[in-house]
Image 1: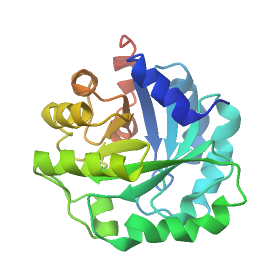
Image 2: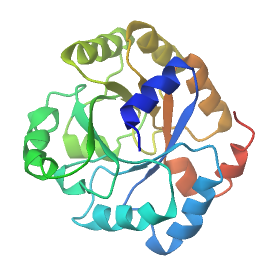
Image 3: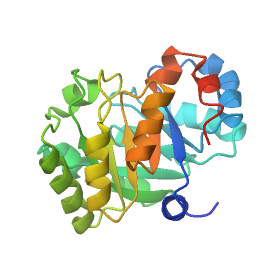
Image 4: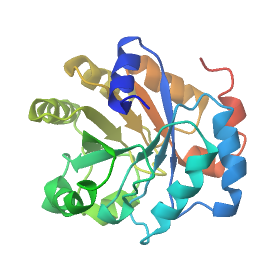
Length: 241
């Protein structure tokens, strides 16, 4: 498989729309996996993300191992902590929570993960992770003990600082189950100020919201809750190109 980061960059340059389904190991029922992944394979989804804010040990490994033989799509870890690392995945978003000032999620979890990553064949993608106010206290807020950003210029400056620090992707996240998605205005402002691919997730539950995110400049959109709560969401997306 070619570099996942390289493919995301190339798609962004061609203005191709990428879509990831986020599977939370702590919420997903394994016995439903085969049917769910079949729907994923028959949809416009381009990536499978696996991870959550708080997941019990070994659950992520078991889930990734079960997904692997069911799809040819790249499997990317979206870990809440070091326990969610699996060598059966293709890549890991090395998330630094740059919107917060908790050292545990800025650098400490990364240091703890090195002993694992050193002996794994995972593509490691440094990612600036920015929590955006989504109108709800999400699991990420509780676990990381950080506050989401609200002011647009602060969000833009944080994204740009992350790029200058060497991050390869920027991820704007309203949080799982957020009442409000990241606004099109904010997405557009960030996209215009950075030169690296932009990922957007949280609070997107409709085709209109998805289209708005792409139109504003998102290169890759991540959706989780919408697929968990609405089995018909796959069909709603069938005519998006």
